[in-house]
Image (cartoon, rainbow, N blue to C red; front, side):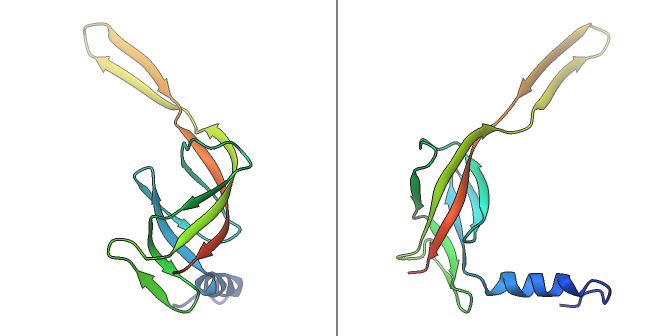
Length: 124
């Protein structure tokens, strides 16, 4: 991978990130990449802020040197984290319109999510 000579700090950032343990897990019908110390937003979970939570549906896991891929899940792998808070995302505006009839409808939606700070990635 080549980087621009005026921005050598980008190279060290990508190399360092590749050596960290990480996992790709599934929750709420979506997939997320988890690294220790990173905060991610997942669909709303039924857990109080401050509680520990474990995700067992790990699809891919890496300890920084070797990568384990599951078929469909990696045995013994898990991602643990702490619930930071529950919040709503940015507003999505819905506007329905039919020309020449005076038909206009306004609506809005804010998706709820849970913010989780990843504490540990365990490779099985």
